[in-house]
Amino acid sequence: MTDYETIVYPREDGVWIAEVPAMPGCWAIGESRADALWEVGKVFQVFADDYRQTGRALPKPNPSS
Image (cartoon, rainbow, N blue to C red; front, side, top):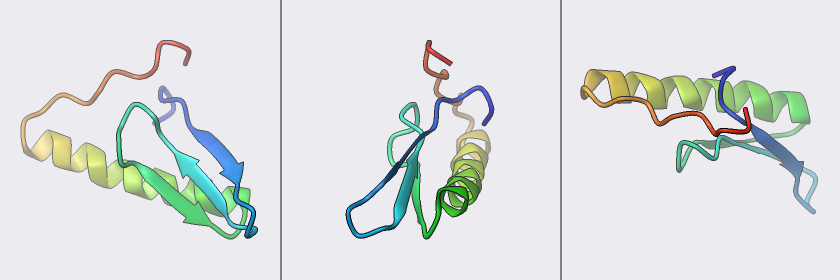
């Protein structure tokens, strides 16, 4: 996941969102920035495992990363 851009930002209600734009649907919520990053790492792994198990290549990381 280190090659993929991850965007992290707070919502107005105080929770944090982390998302990986190169993988649509790969996002997570946490009570802190660190929690959101931890959770999106787990979600990314689930996505990556699914891609591999179905024989699909992972999306390319964003060019800016």
